[in-house]
Length: 478
Image (cartoon, rainbow, N blue to C red; front, side, top):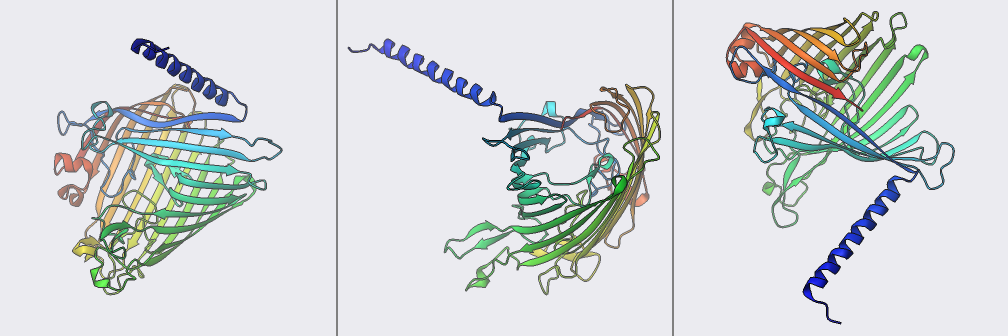
């Protein structure tokens, strides 16, 4: 029998619907099984802001430049993280059996700083989407408490949330790791495609293949951590890192290698101690951390504590960072005095030097110049008054100072008054979501004012005082 054209069309549609139905049946069959589960989570902030110093302009961060959110984070722009995790168990689960997690997380931010509602991904300065997490983790492999993970992971310990600063051991990156009870070991592969960077270049021109092509080389970061747990919840964490960048210049014709640098190394050691205070309300603590980095592992600048963000200039005679170093010291505390009041605070001190001889502007790769020395210090306090379960009054005071090279100090003081609706009606500094009404005022010294050394001053010009008004929301569900 010969099918007419319209009959053939109807048959194809019927078969397609049957296929879709079969796919749905299979999908439902999978997600309804007892060995499979799905979890969701999100972190984000969004809102509007402005300043009386420039009419019609969105508010800008008052903090000093090159320090990120250190100095208070109330003026941060819109940001979103959304993720999911797939949880699976073995075919024949038993006591302490293997647990399998596949975790995915996407982050969204605006490259121009504009509001999310006015941005999209099609513009050159529109929304950017990143995948900071995509990894597989297996827990209780072979034996209880032995965990293995592979992929890209936000692998880090506690942060100073009121400064949005991940201290001590921010090992977020792509690699693999093993954990056993209180010990952790990992290897990360760090690289960058930024050919304007002044740090040890992660790129070189490959001529071994016969056809010149720009190649990326990785920095391997080998990490060891161990926790000692004591009575009353006290915790001592020890850290050691070894950094290595391979040498791509081994060729019979090294003069043809451009945009490259020889291999290099670096080391990190550190310790962090947490003490929980039993004489206060539950959740009170103090965390003190100190870390020393050398060579190419002297990083931690621009509001980041990651050791692989190498600071300063290379030694142009040896083309290495042998004499570079950094100190990173932080303290973070929370006192929950009562159901009426909590006090959160922190101090951060960073001191870094590159491998060049001087402290001022020094020449580095490709003839560029950078400061070869910097130090910064910030102190901040936040009082949270619980007027009721729903109404909280947050008051923050910050002081920041920074020195680049041998220049005078940039200095800034800031106060923020933040009436807050804590929608879950919890009397806790960690309760979310928040609806916040924000007023911040920053006061700058003459050197910061004259050099417009903050995002706010870059917008409005030299001012001794800056103002920020905002209505913002923040949430997390991790």
